[in-house]
Every structure is written in C-alpha cells, then in structure tokens.
Length: 437
Image (cartoon, rainbow, N blue to C red):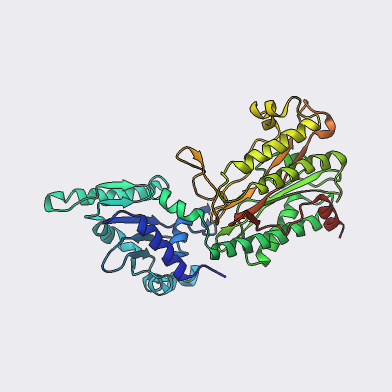
C-alpha cells in the first residue's frame, strides 16, 4: 500500500498548473539531523518534498519548470557510491531518480551550484518557501546574485520570488483516495495499539511501559515510528497537555491519558483515550468523561461540507460549559460563561487540527478573514478535553487531578464525516469491558 508514481505525477501537474508562465519551483529535501556526537536521528523526508515525488533520501533538490522542453521535473540527488552504500544503505542515484521516481532529468547534487543557476536564469518568477532553512535560503540568494553579476553580459535574473506554501498546502489539504487509505491504515494500527495499552494497564507499571506497548503494536503493524512523541500521563500528569516524560508509576483510583498515533508511509494518526487504571471509572471521573464524550459527539455532528472550520469547536464549548455549570464547577448563565471564556480554565485548547503528512497538517483555517468551509477529502482531529489541575483550590478536592481528552480522526465526506479511528472504544462501558477482558 503506497502512493503510485502516477499520483505523484498528478500532484506535480496540479501544482505546475497553478504556477505563472515562465516560472520555476524549487523544493529542497530534509536534512539528516545530528542526535549525538556521531549518530543521527532516523531520517524523515520533508513533507512537501515527499508529497511531490516520494523520493526518500536526504541531500536532494526538486525543481519544477512548467513547459521545459527537456522535461518539467528535475531532481538533484546523491550519486551511487558502493562504499557509502555498504555502510549506510542503498541510494537511487540520478538513474534511479528517473527510473523509480519519475524524474524527467536528474543530476548529481554536487553539480547543483553549476546547473541550477542556469535553470533559474531568465525565469520571471521563482516559487520557493523562504525561511525554513537559513542555509538553503543563502544558497538560493547566492545563485540569484551569481545571475545578477552577469547582467551586463545579458543574463536575466528572476523578477519575483513567490512563497510556494500557499498553493502547495492548499493541494495537500484535500486528500486523495490513496491518501485516505494510508490514513485509514494508520488509524487501524493506532486503534490496536490503544486497545493493547488498555489491556496492559495496571497499578505499579510505569507510563513508559504503556508507551512501549503502543510502540510495539505500531511496529508490528508496519509503522515503525510514532507520528509524534507519545503522551502517557497518569494521575496529575493527565492535566499536562503535552506531557512526554512518561516516567511515573500508575496508581489505582487514577486515570491515564494516552495521546499517541503511528506514522504509516509518512501519514499520521492522532488518537487520545483516557481510562481508569483500575479498570472502572469512579463517580467524579465518569461525570467529567461523559461531558467530554458528549462534546466530541456534538463536534462530530458538525463536520460536514459547507459547515465552517470553527463549528465543531463551538459545539464543544457549548457542551463543556453547560456540563461544568451543571456540576457546579462553573457558576452563571451558560451564554455569559461562553462570552467571558470562563471555560478556558478547564478547556484551554481548540477542538482539532488538520491531519495528514504532518500530525498538525498544513492548510489555512481562515480564508479572506473568514473560517474556512469544510470540503470532502479534508481530514481533521476531534479532541475536546477537560483538565482540572491538581492544585486548583477553586474546586472541591474530589475533582482535582482529573484530566480527560478523547480524540479521533475524521475525514469529511459528501454528506458528513467518517471516523478513521472508530475501532478504539470510547463509551465508558466498552472501555471497562475491554480492560476487564
């Protein structure tokens, strides 16, 4: 299961159709990142670069030149090197870039300083995402200055630079059928991992041991890496939104919140479940859980074409504010509490974000100052939560230290939405039954 060469080609054609005549687009690959002294982190390709060609190596530059007679897709990459491949693994080389990844032309990346200025020269517009890599920004400007230095000899430098992000990220926002299959697969693997963690939870084990259960299931499913650092927060740690220490021992009577998702073929899943260490919710935990679950259901009901991006969030605010008021944790009229944002003491984040090649995926949330309308193929998370800090003296002690978030991944369909992660239990009775099994 992967994206085909034909689909990558379609993506490039769609982007080039948006570019002005006599223009060029330049997209560098990601770089390897040093972890410690002489070791690197596992390489992960830049998402924009991957979206356009799927080439999986560092030290590469993708160039698109609409209408170029000798081919519109040019790739610079590392040459084949038997000695380096012995130590570090296979390289496609320029020949493989053409044969395996559809490049019309490919050159050794060591020749980029000699060849790319000639491809830029005479173009009216350069599409490039300035500001992501200071090092590559300097190289781009050096090539342009090289052309400018030869103006007296007839060289023509580019007239304009245009940020590539807006056009490219708008294309990435709406997923193809093939992308949705990969996102569905990531969701299925992640669902199994969350179920495994629920079954493994018990007092005395550490948060990192539940994280290990998750990572094992990811790898077993063909997703070697997590899409982001896993959050496993028990007891008071469930109230820390981006807690990643994962070092505390679980205790009976407490909750554990796991926010974790795998990355499958570069596509992310993002799922959160909260469950009792003992296998049964107590009265206060269940009361808060029921509010969050109702808020998520209200948000899911708002995800449909034509509705705006903020509608699901507004639905969660209404349900959570009313629920907290009914429990006595907030006091006043619901409309006044919403207007004053009193709920933000307990619900301080938004209800979701775009999802795709990045876990917080690209795409504008507003267009011309208005919330964006949802369209089929868009994928977003739905993740309301309530967090009552352990040191919150404004509430009775029995409520303190309860942190609950429920998160699923949804794709907008023609008449509503479909959850990609529905296989993980959400109903409290189902969670308790799974843990008892």
